[in-house]
Amino acid sequence: MKSRLLAGLAAVVLAIIGAFLVVSYAQGADSRAVQNLEPVSVMVVQKAVPAGTPVATLQAFITSQELPGKAVSKTALKNLDGQAGKVTAVELLPGEQLVAERLIQPEALKTSGTVDIPKGLQEVSFQLEPQRVVGGRIAAGDHVGVFINLKDGGIEGKTDKQTTQLTVHKALVTAVQRAPLAAPSPQPSANGSAAPPADTSLPVGSMIVTVAVNDVDAAKIVYASNFTEVASIWLSREPLDATDSGRPGIITRPEVYK
Image 1: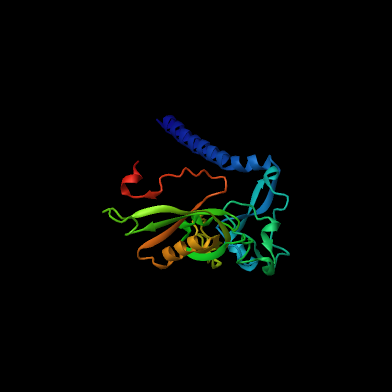
Image 2: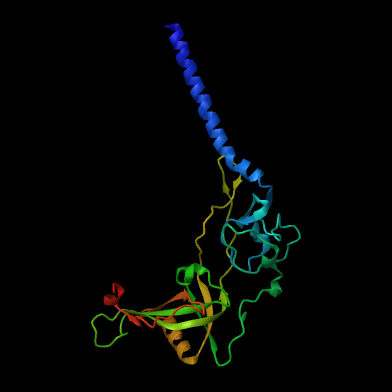
């Protein structure tokens, strides 16, 4: 009886030790894999950062991370030493390495007129939420399609008057503006130390988009921007080589499932 009890206890102990060794091995697998690839510690973006964000507040949005040497950019920064007074030149997205060319002097950052206006066109600005601006990932120099949605009155003589139309094709974006985000406050971790801010790739805050269009298209955009009780705007990224099928024109409810 006593020998069976001892054997049982020994089996339990061995099982616990085995489970511990398996977990420890699995947890160290990633570290060993990186070590075999000559890891380099660089700054990596944790949370989306708008263009124009000062380096002084940048620390809360980035972290130091070890990456395989072959995957590290030649200009990737290991720390922010010597970068004081600079701002981000463009929007920084989660997961990207912080490279030196992303940080510039404030006077080098242009918030408007960053792209030359083609002759004969005029600029017009409007404010939209990020989900209406391809997730906030539009930049000066891109071309966009401007969709105008009308709640009523788009098609006379029809009972279904709620309509959507790709009204302006391939409009040149000359500027994109968004207020810099406030640095998130570190949250206390379980051991009482400050934990890094939560990682999220969702953009926040309204954006002001400026496009260069002709006078007729400018008037349409102003109408949809001004009379928000009956109209709204949505943008698509529409490069110059995007296919234009010419259909379906104006979308109403019956056209959605065709």
